[in-house]
Image (cartoon, rainbow, N blue to C red; front, side, top):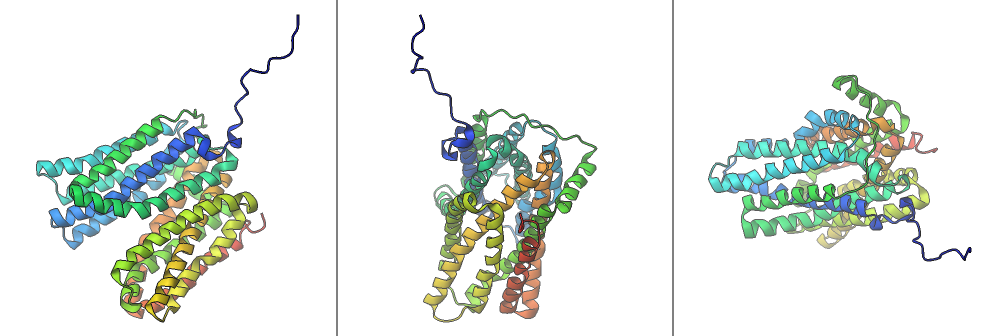
Amino acid sequence: MTGAPRTDSPLPDPPLSDLPLRKQRDYRLLWSARTISITGSEVSKLAIPLTAVTLLAAGPAEMGILTAAASLPALLFGLQAGAIADRLSRHRPLMIACELVSAVAAVTVPVAWLLGVLTVPWLIVVALVIGTAGVTFRAANFPHLAAIVPENQRTSALAGFHASYSMASVAGPGLAGLLVQILTAPLAVLAESLSFLSSALLLRSIRTPEHAEPAPTRGMWRDIVEGLRTSTTIPTLRALLGAGVTINFFAMAYTAVHILYMVNTLGIPQGLIGVLIALSGAGGLLGAWATTRLAKRFGENRILLGSVLFFPLEILAVGLLNGALWWKLVVLATTGVLTGGIVVAFATCMGAITLRDSPTELRARVNATMTFAVQGVMALGGLAGGLLAEVLGLRPVIFICAAGIALSTAWIWASPLRSR
């Protein structure tokens, strides 16, 4: 006897692409892992230099080497890391290994201090190890994101990561200061070690299977060259690369002089400079929130076309700024919040378009090429800004940076991103 169909059978789960990211378990784990890890790194940015200065009596040369050690791995190993990541069918094990290596390296700082064997060279080696692991992690994380997040939600996912960076830039320094005050600088580095360990455990809990097709390899050098060639021959990727290099060069030239300019020329009290920097981080949070919503309506290309127009405005406003202190603070706070949001909008859409337009088997290498170029040029920009200020003065360099960063508009608006 055939009865009516049962109505109490479980309904099938909705497609992953129909679920908001906040309800997707594996994305929440990935986002939490990155947020915790980045916040721990922000703590060490203060704790490790303080350890070198206050406990080890490091000199200017040693501090310069220690500072450079954090960014040097991106230049030395960034391209190779991308080539290695493209050869893998599973990226998560490598990411977990990188976090564990970083955790071990960080924990050696308080251990060595308690044993009385901590030295500045020890700190430099720790910075190099953590920096190398971080470069490798980022190379693997870029293609790994494609396995975790549906294509139509990747812009929102990238915006979420940039929100993490902004939150860490706001909360990290305050947390670092508190931990250093309570635990002393070397023991505060334990927070970074624990953050890496927590990140590894969260990544280990992700269940989404990975089935990436490993790219065929013809040797490390040829693999790297293929990534470089792809980044410069696909028109949209070439435009992003050119714009990113232009922006970062002149932004770092501006960064090299803007503290001096605010203190010596504008007369901004030193205690308020940190507040202004924190407001930029808050603007980044707003930018991440807005980008997620605007991208659904207008698309990543239009956001990129619009955001690049605003990059010179803050620098130009700072160069033209005069008047009472309250007026200067209002302008700097407003432009800082806006620029923080614009930077996140640009970076989010740049990552989404890179992920979209890169060949699947070359995603890690293209991303590594982008990172290598836009990060590597920062050192040159900072050096150029300082040297120009010695010759021309602070205010002329501000205007040069505003004009130079405006050149990024040509890269984006003259590319197929405009007509797409």
